Image (cartoon, rainbow, N blue to C red):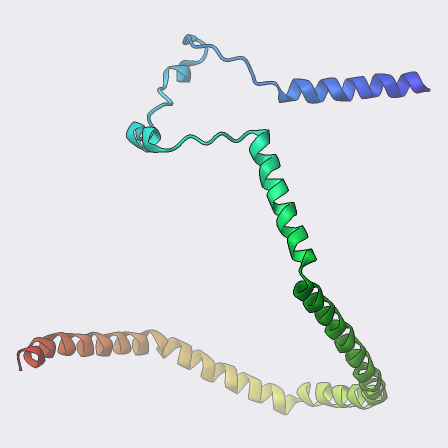
Length: 182
């Protein structure tokens, strides 16, 4: 049984190592791959001068550890400050107090909502029956025809509005030099 786990773990580790290795690259062009002669170095956005002016950063493990220790020291300094601890305790007590007040208000609110449920259900049934009547359906048809008429006139109204705005802008541009000249 353990040999199965050993073989499975070796296969998983080897497959993860193989998939993380880069594919071999060749610098010579192949007749089977005509696109390999394309120059990938010049896409038009590369600037050698800007690359030379960019400072080189050394992102090594030492920098990461120094940053982590600096963050930890800052956090511990915050925890050491009495004012910070007092502020955190006041914030937590305020949150707990608010939660208690919400729970106290929610109980009666839920009871009231549950007691009103039959009334809401009956009113909903009456509204559905009223909406299903022939008179209301005729009103909805009449309303939809009116909306269709307004929608058909919308392009003309928009055109008139844009012409008006253009006229106002032209008038402002024509009178601005006269006002400035006095």
